[in-house]
Image 1 (cartoon, rainbow, N blue to C red):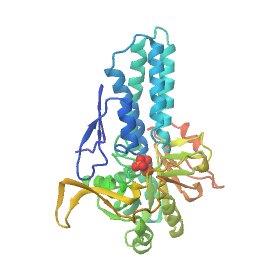
Image 2: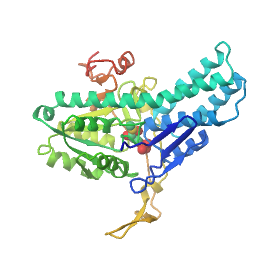
Image 3: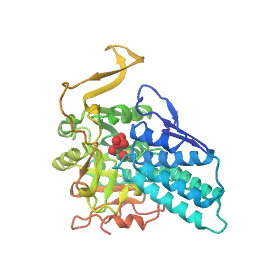
Image 4: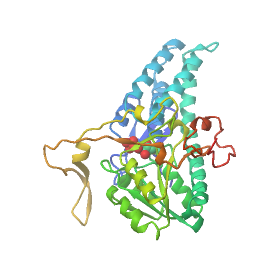
Length: 392
Ligand SMILES: CSC[C@@H](O)[C@@H](O)C(=O)COP(=O)(O)O
């Protein structure tokens, strides 16, 4: 069975509540943009592409189920106001702002088209939002393919045989419309028989690695091992050779024009450790995550989340032997009264990144160490592009 974080049919949207995973698989209905805003803010749905798609589809559902005015201008204003509101839910991942920008344009165009009415503006919006869901899965499958090919032909480990990879946070089916980005690369390596082992980091403080990535790896029966974030360096030093670890592959919340990449907190330390040990550090992201209007990482707003996400841990009771799903407990794991700093993301400078895997190929730096990311927007997704766009 395929893991599905987002269930959609016209007029109906359900999201898998990711705060209850891995122990309970419960879907929440999303009826409106307000529902989506709260689900995103509370991280019941999360991951840069998934956030954008849930927001876009929630407004589609709201539009389909409401009593619609026949006046195109009124529907246009309603949609634009809701999009502006949805974008305020979480600031760092650019996919949501990118989706809102594209949907705004579709709406504006539909509202000034000849013979426009409320129904035609609504239909244009809904069709565009639905296409985003389909496009994201296709893009991720292409990211997986390009990434796996690149790793097998551009790493020493790949030239030796089956490779192992370390990944961080959750970038799989749960973080996207399906298949995943960085985890899609691991899925693709596995599907083509090139994966020896996957390692996933716990990803403190919200444990997207141990709760969500581990859940996906177990679900897909991919050989995998969980490590805490603090074990990553020792893993590469002590098992790098024996496990034939080719590199570290992560997702992204926003890639700036120069290649600096915001991703889940802890990503930057992994990039430094990859550099120290001479293994590849790869970012896997669809073009919706590349933001040419952000010049560098210094311009990316980093979301800071409540301190209690660091000091408290929530989960079903476990007495050391048995898991009791009926009792969900919150326990404190820090000294009462301590101050907490909880940035949800960090920025990895472009110079620590070996390649950015997109749906149209893998972008490498040119001879002067510069990523030319604008070229990915000139390529066409899914068309038989060479897997390496580097140096153009
Ligand atoms: C394909 S998801 C890429 C990123 O969004 C992912 O690595 C990440 O940082 C998610 O953060 P989250 O705070 O769980 O939304």
